[in-house]
Length: 168
Image 1 (cartoon, rainbow, N blue to C red):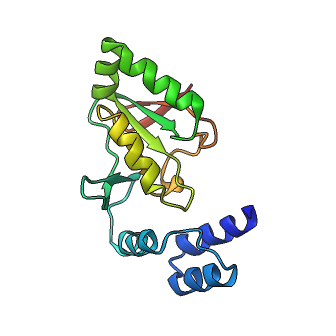
Image 2: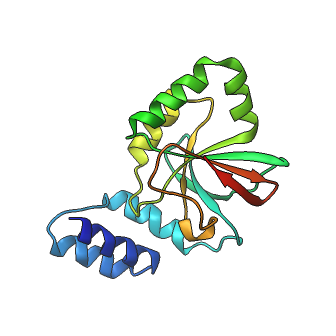
């Protein structure tokens, strides 16, 4: 199964849409919901500015690609996951502490590593439960600093301006 997912991710990154559809038919299951695949095609085929980008889930359920641009001299990007107990615990702790919540609202961005599969339902559920700081999906990990650990969640990445500083 993991090999199937890796191949599918590679096909998606290359924009080989016919091969993605054929591959899913060949293995007799849809690793990506056909509706999400159509949405993904549209997003991947658009021209986007250089730099790190994020999928943002709009209220109507559509995904929109936006550039990540720190607006402050200092910012924190938190690699998180709705399926990670530590991530949900960290978010609960942040939301229960007004000072922490205010800090992360101003300086923080919660992101989900891009697995090649758009977990739109999970993302929507997380964003309804945690309206104060919505979770976004990374468009392409290769656009982000190479030091980022995408597997460990939650991971706190500190930026000074647009430059990576360190990771906790």
